[in-house]
Image: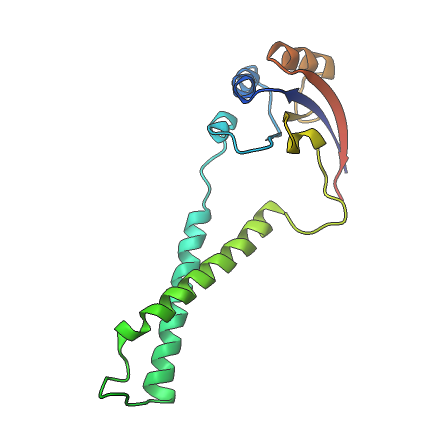
Length: 175
């Protein structure tokens, strides 16, 4: 499946943010914006909803905490009870360090797996890149031509009017 994109290359992040507002106001659907560093406010400008990853993090943390408490209570209370210094077999204050560590462990590993699964970022032989300069010093706005009813000359003119230093066309093949 081949998709065609119009790529607007911008020099400055403020010009890019202004261009995003103007392009969306003109009814153009922006596929994505690539930048060399995080740009404050770009999610709001693109209309991207807040992520639900914190909910997943909380779930993974609770699973880690439950597993840690179950492991310690079962091991020290039922499977291999030891009386040490007259303390009770199930002493919750003693379980805090292990419970904390397993909570963090489950959260970290669960979030990494969830993030890579959702975004599709995984090791490949050749990673598709819209414009290599977006990893260095340029900001690139990608607009899918098939999704928008506008022709390439009209999009090129609109991008140039909004501050794009150059406009390119690129075809990407999704495998």
